[in-house]
Image (cartoon, rainbow, N blue to C red; front, side, top):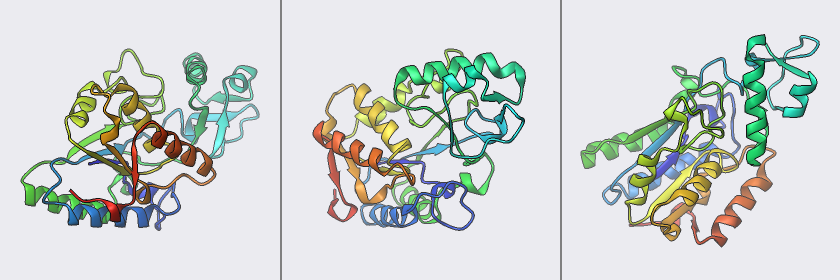
Length: 261
Protein backbone atom coordinates (compact mmCIF):
# COMPACT_ATOMS: atom_id res chain seq x y z
CA UNK A 1 0.00 0.00 0.00
CA UNK A 2 1.17 3.51 -0.87
CA UNK A 3 -0.34 6.25 1.31
CA UNK A 4 0.42 9.72 0.01
CA UNK A 5 0.62 12.62 2.48
CA UNK A 6 -2.05 11.54 5.03
CA UNK A 7 -1.18 14.54 7.21
CA UNK A 8 -3.15 16.73 9.57
CA UNK A 9 -2.66 19.92 7.57
CA UNK A 10 -4.49 18.35 4.61
CA UNK A 11 -7.46 17.14 6.67
CA UNK A 12 -10.70 19.05 7.12
CA UNK A 13 -10.22 19.13 10.89
CA UNK A 14 -9.65 21.94 13.38
CA UNK A 15 -6.20 23.49 13.10
CA UNK A 16 -5.36 22.35 9.57
CA UNK A 17 -3.70 24.98 7.41
CA UNK A 18 -4.58 23.52 4.00
CA UNK A 19 -7.73 21.45 4.57
CA UNK A 20 -9.05 19.27 1.77
CA UNK A 21 -12.81 18.79 1.96
CA UNK A 22 -13.55 15.13 2.62
CA UNK A 23 -10.02 14.18 3.67
CA UNK A 24 -10.89 13.31 7.27
CA UNK A 25 -13.55 10.85 6.11
CA UNK A 26 -11.19 9.54 3.41
CA UNK A 27 -8.56 8.69 5.98
CA UNK A 28 -11.04 7.11 8.40
CA UNK A 29 -12.04 4.76 5.56
CA UNK A 30 -8.41 4.09 4.76
CA UNK A 31 -7.60 3.29 8.38
CA UNK A 32 -10.51 0.84 8.50
CA UNK A 33 -9.21 -0.85 5.34
CA UNK A 34 -5.74 -1.22 6.84
CA UNK A 35 -7.20 -2.78 9.96
CA UNK A 36 -9.38 -5.16 7.97
CA UNK A 37 -6.58 -6.28 5.63
CA UNK A 38 -3.68 -6.02 8.06
CA UNK A 39 -2.80 -9.71 7.92
CA UNK A 40 -2.55 -9.64 4.13
CA UNK A 41 -0.79 -6.31 3.54
CA UNK A 42 2.87 -7.11 2.94
CA UNK A 43 4.23 -3.54 2.92
CA UNK A 44 3.10 0.00 3.64
CA UNK A 45 4.84 3.12 2.37
CA UNK A 46 3.77 6.52 3.72
CA UNK A 47 4.93 9.73 2.07
CA UNK A 48 5.14 12.94 4.09
CA UNK A 49 5.01 16.41 2.58
CA UNK A 50 7.77 18.18 4.50
CA UNK A 51 8.47 21.91 4.25
CA UNK A 52 10.43 24.70 5.85
CA UNK A 53 8.92 28.07 6.73
CA UNK A 54 10.85 29.78 3.91
CA UNK A 55 9.91 28.03 0.69
CA UNK A 56 9.41 29.23 -2.86
CA UNK A 57 5.79 28.11 -2.62
CA UNK A 58 5.08 29.85 0.72
CA UNK A 59 3.99 33.49 1.28
CA UNK A 60 7.07 34.42 3.32
CA UNK A 61 9.29 34.08 0.24
CA UNK A 62 7.47 36.73 -1.80
CA UNK A 63 6.18 40.28 -1.84
CA UNK A 64 4.44 42.43 -4.45
CA UNK A 65 6.03 45.35 -6.27
CA UNK A 66 4.51 47.79 -3.77
CA UNK A 67 5.84 45.79 -0.83
CA UNK A 68 2.49 44.18 0.05
CA UNK A 69 2.38 40.60 1.22
CA UNK A 70 1.42 37.85 -1.19
CA UNK A 71 -1.70 35.98 -0.11
CA UNK A 72 -1.98 32.20 -0.10
CA UNK A 73 -3.50 30.70 -3.26
CA UNK A 74 -1.81 33.32 -5.44
CA UNK A 75 -0.37 31.95 -8.68
CA UNK A 76 2.84 33.56 -9.91
CA UNK A 77 3.85 33.12 -13.53
CA UNK A 78 7.31 33.45 -15.00
CA UNK A 79 6.07 36.41 -17.05
CA UNK A 80 4.75 38.20 -13.95
CA UNK A 81 8.05 37.73 -12.16
CA UNK A 82 9.98 38.97 -15.18
CA UNK A 83 7.68 42.02 -15.37
CA UNK A 84 8.29 42.85 -11.72
CA UNK A 85 4.77 42.17 -10.44
CA UNK A 86 6.27 39.98 -7.71
CA UNK A 87 9.71 39.82 -6.11
CA UNK A 88 11.48 37.50 -3.68
CA UNK A 89 11.94 39.18 -0.30
CA UNK A 90 15.61 38.28 -0.60
CA UNK A 91 16.65 40.20 -3.72
CA UNK A 92 19.57 37.85 -4.35
CA UNK A 93 17.06 35.01 -4.90
CA UNK A 94 15.58 36.61 -8.02
CA UNK A 95 17.75 34.89 -10.68
CA UNK A 96 17.18 31.45 -9.19
CA UNK A 97 13.45 32.06 -8.74
CA UNK A 98 13.13 33.23 -12.35
CA UNK A 99 15.01 30.19 -13.63
CA UNK A 100 12.74 27.94 -11.56
CA UNK A 101 9.49 29.45 -12.81
CA UNK A 102 10.72 29.26 -16.41
CA UNK A 103 11.65 25.59 -15.99
CA UNK A 104 8.43 24.75 -14.13
CA UNK A 105 6.20 26.20 -16.84
CA UNK A 106 8.25 24.52 -19.56
CA UNK A 107 7.25 21.17 -18.07
CA UNK A 108 3.60 22.06 -18.65
CA UNK A 109 2.19 20.47 -15.50
CA UNK A 110 1.93 23.36 -13.03
CA UNK A 111 2.30 27.11 -12.53
CA UNK A 112 3.80 28.19 -9.21
CA UNK A 113 1.14 28.33 -6.51
CA UNK A 114 1.78 30.18 -3.27
CA UNK A 115 0.24 27.85 -0.68
CA UNK A 116 -0.48 28.53 2.98
CA UNK A 117 2.43 27.34 5.12
CA UNK A 118 1.71 23.65 5.57
CA UNK A 119 3.33 20.43 6.71
CA UNK A 120 6.13 22.40 8.32
CA UNK A 121 8.73 20.06 9.74
CA UNK A 122 8.21 19.68 13.49
CA UNK A 123 4.64 20.97 13.50
CA UNK A 124 1.36 19.27 14.39
CA UNK A 125 0.27 19.71 10.79
CA UNK A 126 3.15 17.54 9.61
CA UNK A 127 1.92 14.62 11.69
CA UNK A 128 -0.08 11.72 10.27
CA UNK A 129 -3.86 11.69 10.71
CA UNK A 130 -4.55 10.00 14.06
CA UNK A 131 -6.64 7.11 12.72
CA UNK A 132 -4.14 6.27 9.98
CA UNK A 133 -1.30 6.51 12.49
CA UNK A 134 -3.05 4.10 14.85
CA UNK A 135 -3.75 1.63 12.05
CA UNK A 136 -0.18 1.58 10.73
CA UNK A 137 1.22 1.22 14.27
CA UNK A 138 -1.03 -1.81 14.79
CA UNK A 139 0.05 -3.23 11.40
CA UNK A 140 3.73 -2.90 12.31
CA UNK A 141 3.24 -4.73 15.58
CA UNK A 142 1.11 -7.46 14.02
CA UNK A 143 3.39 -8.05 11.04
CA UNK A 144 6.68 -7.17 12.77
CA UNK A 145 7.62 -4.97 9.84
CA UNK A 146 8.48 -1.30 9.57
CA UNK A 147 6.40 1.18 7.64
CA UNK A 148 8.58 2.89 5.04
CA UNK A 149 8.39 6.67 5.48
CA UNK A 150 9.40 8.90 2.57
CA UNK A 151 9.88 12.63 3.16
CA UNK A 152 9.50 15.01 0.24
CA UNK A 153 9.64 18.79 -0.13
CA UNK A 154 12.63 19.74 2.03
CA UNK A 155 14.34 21.62 -0.79
CA UNK A 156 12.88 25.17 -0.60
CA UNK A 157 13.69 25.99 -4.23
CA UNK A 158 11.34 23.57 -5.96
CA UNK A 159 7.80 22.27 -5.48
CA UNK A 160 7.59 18.57 -4.73
CA UNK A 161 4.06 17.33 -5.32
CA UNK A 162 5.15 13.89 -6.48
CA UNK A 163 6.66 11.51 -3.95
CA UNK A 164 9.01 10.29 -6.67
CA UNK A 165 10.67 13.52 -7.81
CA UNK A 166 10.43 17.30 -7.54
CA UNK A 167 8.66 19.30 -10.21
CA UNK A 168 12.03 20.71 -11.27
CA UNK A 169 14.77 18.41 -9.94
CA UNK A 170 17.86 20.14 -8.57
CA UNK A 171 20.98 18.51 -10.07
CA UNK A 172 22.87 19.22 -6.83
CA UNK A 173 20.22 17.63 -4.57
CA UNK A 174 19.59 13.88 -4.96
CA UNK A 175 16.47 14.23 -2.80
CA UNK A 176 14.74 16.09 -5.62
CA UNK A 177 15.67 13.62 -8.34
CA UNK A 178 13.79 10.48 -9.37
CA UNK A 179 13.68 8.08 -6.41
CA UNK A 180 14.51 5.00 -8.43
CA UNK A 181 14.79 2.82 -5.34
CA UNK A 182 11.25 3.65 -4.28
CA UNK A 183 9.94 3.06 -7.80
CA UNK A 184 11.53 -0.38 -7.84
CA UNK A 185 10.21 -1.28 -4.38
CA UNK A 186 6.68 -0.30 -5.38
CA UNK A 187 7.00 -2.26 -8.61
CA UNK A 188 8.01 -5.42 -6.74
CA UNK A 189 4.49 -5.99 -5.41
CA UNK A 190 1.75 -8.07 -7.00
CA UNK A 191 -0.84 -5.35 -6.39
CA UNK A 192 -0.37 -1.79 -5.15
CA UNK A 193 -3.19 0.07 -3.42
CA UNK A 194 -2.81 3.86 -3.56
CA UNK A 195 -4.60 6.45 -1.41
CA UNK A 196 -3.98 9.82 0.23
CA UNK A 197 -4.27 13.56 -0.29
CA UNK A 198 -4.87 15.30 -2.52
CA UNK A 199 -6.15 13.65 -5.69
CA UNK A 200 -5.71 16.92 -7.60
CA UNK A 201 -2.06 17.41 -6.67
CA UNK A 202 0.22 15.06 -4.73
CA UNK A 203 -1.65 11.82 -5.50
CA UNK A 204 -2.01 12.87 -9.12
CA UNK A 205 1.65 13.83 -9.58
CA UNK A 206 2.94 10.72 -7.79
CA UNK A 207 0.82 8.33 -9.81
CA UNK A 208 1.66 10.08 -13.07
CA UNK A 209 5.36 9.71 -12.30
CA UNK A 210 4.92 6.10 -11.19
CA UNK A 211 3.13 5.19 -14.41
CA UNK A 212 5.83 6.92 -16.44
CA UNK A 213 8.73 5.18 -14.70
CA UNK A 214 7.36 1.77 -13.59
CA UNK A 215 10.03 -0.73 -14.72
CA UNK A 216 7.59 -3.57 -15.35
CA UNK A 217 5.16 -1.31 -17.24
CA UNK A 218 2.44 -3.39 -15.54
CA UNK A 219 0.15 -0.51 -14.59
CA UNK A 220 -2.78 -2.91 -14.24
CA UNK A 221 -1.59 -3.81 -10.75
CA UNK A 222 -2.03 -0.21 -9.55
CA UNK A 223 -5.31 0.40 -7.72
CA UNK A 224 -6.49 3.92 -6.89
CA UNK A 225 -8.81 3.95 -3.87
CA UNK A 226 -11.20 6.68 -4.98
CA UNK A 227 -13.02 7.10 -1.66
CA UNK A 228 -9.71 7.53 0.19
CA UNK A 229 -8.59 10.63 -1.71
CA UNK A 230 -10.15 14.04 -2.41
CA UNK A 231 -9.18 17.13 -4.44
CA UNK A 232 -8.15 20.56 -3.24
CA UNK A 233 -11.16 22.88 -3.47
CA UNK A 234 -11.32 24.47 -6.90
CA UNK A 235 -9.36 21.65 -8.52
CA UNK A 236 -12.14 19.07 -8.75
CA UNK A 237 -11.99 19.01 -12.56
CA UNK A 238 -8.27 18.22 -12.53
CA UNK A 239 -8.84 15.33 -10.15
CA UNK A 240 -11.69 13.91 -12.23
CA UNK A 241 -9.64 14.18 -15.40
CA UNK A 242 -6.71 12.45 -13.68
CA UNK A 243 -8.84 9.49 -12.55
CA UNK A 244 -10.45 9.15 -15.96
CA UNK A 245 -7.06 9.24 -17.68
CA UNK A 246 -5.58 6.64 -15.33
CA UNK A 247 -8.57 4.35 -15.87
CA UNK A 248 -8.08 4.68 -19.63
CA UNK A 249 -4.42 3.74 -19.22
CA UNK A 250 -5.34 0.52 -17.45
CA UNK A 251 -5.23 1.37 -13.74
CA UNK A 252 -8.03 0.07 -11.56
CA UNK A 253 -10.25 2.58 -9.73
CA UNK A 254 -12.00 1.09 -6.70
CA UNK A 255 -13.73 2.00 -3.45
CA UNK A 256 -12.24 0.82 -0.16
CA UNK A 257 -15.25 -1.45 0.47
CA UNK A 258 -14.47 -3.33 -2.77
CA UNK A 259 -10.91 -4.27 -1.82
CA UNK A 260 -9.59 -7.41 -0.20
CA UNK A 261 -6.45 -9.50 -0.47
